[in-house]
Every structure is written in structure tokens, then in C-alpha cells.
Image (tube, rainbow, N blue to C red; front, side, top):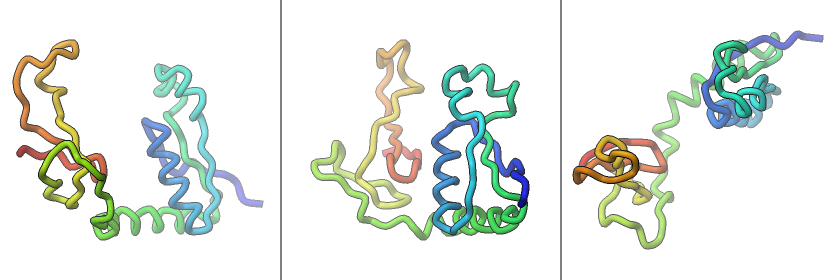
Length: 132
């Protein structure tokens, strides 16, 4: 039987679970280590090496290739079926065409109170940050 090896390290469980799902869709078994520990106390992340995605040693090369191919083809996977009814804004993301956007006030607010008007927007779908 093959041993588990550390494959990738993550800061968030969301990223680790996304890659775990991508690997599962390609028939590769993987396991997430330290997820609950770090979610309960994020200060331990550095001490335990972050959230780890582990694969069997025999699947290591295939797993690397699957994630590499996914990252390269991610842009092509964006479809314009990711629209919402009654959007907040009358324009779309220039990168993917989604109308699921939000206004980024993080750099212009102080303790949750907006101090400047911001024209920075972020797409929920692809994460693109842009000005409008």
C-alpha cells in the first residue's frame, strides 16, 4: 500500500476543499490535514504547517498535472451563465461578463464607515477587481 505524502499547503479550508474536489473528479483520492485545528485556532497555522492536502505517493504526479491543467483552463471554463436577476449595478465584469458584482469599500472605510466614495468593484464569480 502506498503512503500519503504532503501535496499542497493552504491558508484557507475553502481553497483546499476546492482542489480536493477537482482531484476527486479526476479519480484521485486526497485528504485534508489540519483543517479543523486551524479553523478552531488560526494562530496554530504556522506551527503545524498550514492546511495540507495529501495524496497517495503513486498519485502525486497525476495530481500535479490535474491541478496544473485546471489552472490553465480555468479561464476557458468561465461561461456567461453566471448572471443574477435584479443586479445591483447596470454593468458587468469586463473579464468574465458576470453581473454578480459588489462595490469594494475596504480601502475607503474606517471602522465600517465610508469616508470616501469608491469606484472599485469586485466580481463574485471570477474575483476580478476593476474600476467603473
